[in-house]
Length: 93
Image 1: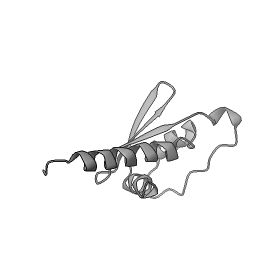
Image 2: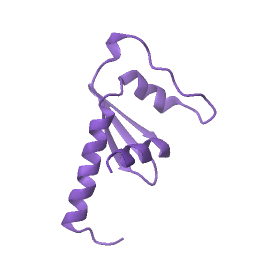
Image 3: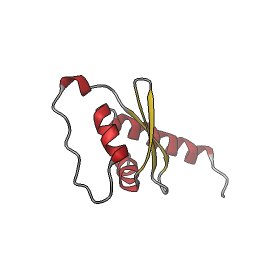
């Protein structure tokens, strides 16, 4: 593993912070749908209920492995979804 320079660390930290900002628009029920989605299912439909409009923060732990932790209220949900991790990472560039 290569040593990380201060510039690289700050750049990656900024990317994670930006990805978390992008993910705040995702309702909590969508987080549950993402965590239980199987590979052969269609895209989950978002519920049409105003009670699901709560802040969600995403922490991309490892882009290559697809590990994303979602925080909402007092819940912490870790999912493995390479496509989501890559999309959040790409949204920051």
